[in-house]
Image 1 (cartoon, helix red, strand yellow):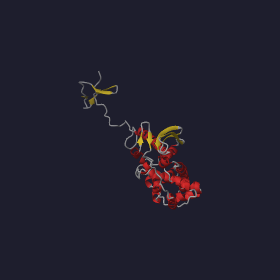
Image 2: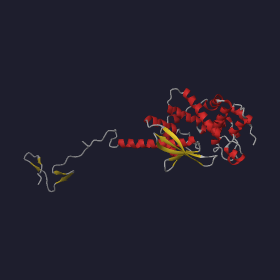
Image 3: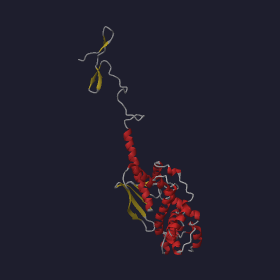
Image 4: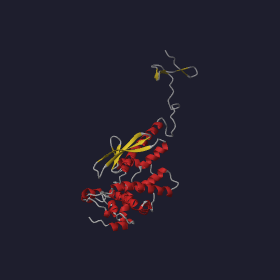
Amino acid sequence: MIFLMYECEERIGYTFRDKTLLRTCFTHSSYSHEHGGKNNERLEFFGDSILGFVTTEYLFVKYPDLGEGQLTMYKQQLVSRKPLAAAIRKLGLNDYILYGVGEKNNTPEHHEAACENLYEALVAGIYLDGGLAEAANFIKRTLLTGFRPSKSLKDAYFDTLGAAEKNGKSGKNGKAEADKVGSGGDKTPVSNYKGKLQEYVQKNKLGEIVYKEKSKSGPQHSPTFAVAVFVGGEEKGEGSGKKKSEAEQAAARVAILKFTEKSDKKNDGNNKGKNRDGKAKSHSGSGMKAPKTGDKRNGNKIERKKGVTPEKNNRGERKTPQSD
């Protein structure tokens, strides 16, 4: 297959000194498995970190008054699959990806992940070929310029937690799969569960959050990662995904759902025994009728003596009958 590198460079806005590196950026794993040579997976891995750094610095400077949780949400809106794939399509670079025969016949929706991977690989390729300044210019020009935060994600904290059950899958052991949540496979914005979890943990002072890879399975060109999240040294959730970042999002979703569910149960328990105004119910003056004349108390029961009727004195007042 002929690779038109000069056309690619014109669309990218950067001329590579190492043309082989440029070709590697566009080489999908399915192509390298059929034809040999390198693919862009290692570059994608490296580019993900560079992209995260440049985006974080950009948001830190642009929004000096925002807290960590809000900045994390904005970052997720920029570096998730859909915006990266959209940037590649806008540049017209998706038509230059080198696919294997089988992969090439898949639907455009299936190729969205490949577009995301290409963007991250290009970031790493430009960094290796021309340095951080050139890579940062590419990111700012193609992704950051004109960024408008999504209010739906900005204001959401618990809004998307219920929808997660529809977009994701939960296993019997509280393990979530990120095939849709966080993977970009769905048509809804990716939810930043890591940011939500971080905000919740910091607010409630629950300790440090640590993500640990538990396993890696599947074929080498398309592995599935399993990641567990620990809060304060205790495992709180596990998730899986085609990328570590997706598995981490899935694990964070499980954890935040557990925390919020526990919080809801606690609040329900505190609300028991309260009336509609939130005040504790009082048993005094609750409308219980006083025992009628002629009744006698027997333990906690009130019984009326059989065959006894109230008598009146000379003044017409009722006399309480005496017990036998």
